[in-house]
Image (cartoon, rainbow, N blue to C red; front, side):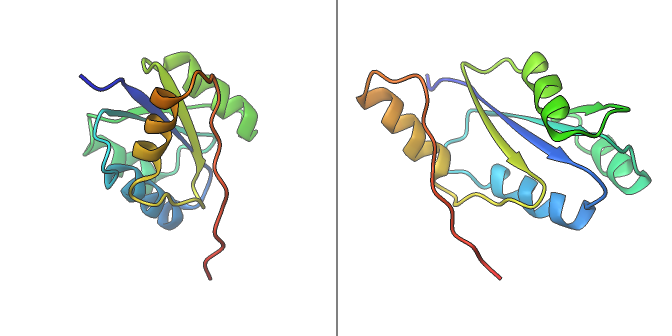
Length: 119
């Protein structure tokens, strides 16, 4: 069985962007992914959306600093591997699959990727 990856999405007051980020995680070719959403602002649209997705771990915090939010997500993560993205990020659909392949082929503890800027 493939190893669990915890995808931690941080968001703050950007619901439309958040949905695109979430969709990019859901559309991964690698399927053994736990999704954790952490926000520093429990706005109504996000709250209602998350109530419809009980399979996603949802964490709210009074502190909206991105590093605090990432740490909160990491504390709840169950995956052997952790991947971070902010609400204004989207992933290529094979990102996690390629990274997991890299971990299997090499004796490494960290893997990072480049970026493409799309307007």
